[in-house]
Length: 98
Image 1 (spheres, rainbow, N blue to C red):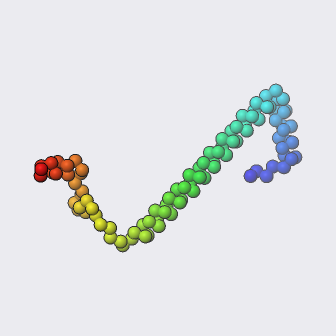
Image 2: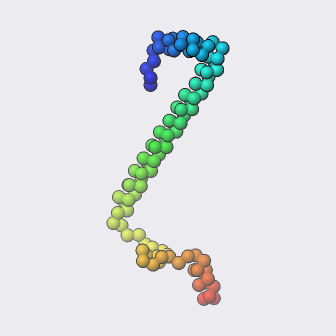
Image 3: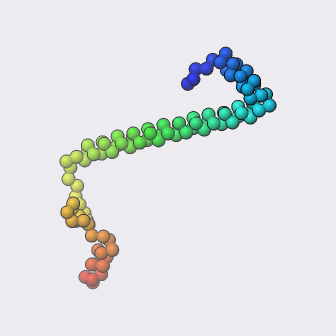
């Protein structure tokens, strides 16, 4: 990713020992390693989520194309102008008939 060679790593190690000190260098390196790991996991999760969203969008688009212009039977009697009767009202109507 960063294309860091051996000489660059050696230079970073020397600078780290000089700036941070040999006592704190392992702790700082461990903390930095954890942060890099978390960033990689976050990026991988984000990538997986984006790929999922793209797949979902493609499936939705395909469903819309496949159902375009087709008529489906409406079993509850609802149309765009008249909404369906809620289930509670249907139960009351059937009780009144008995």
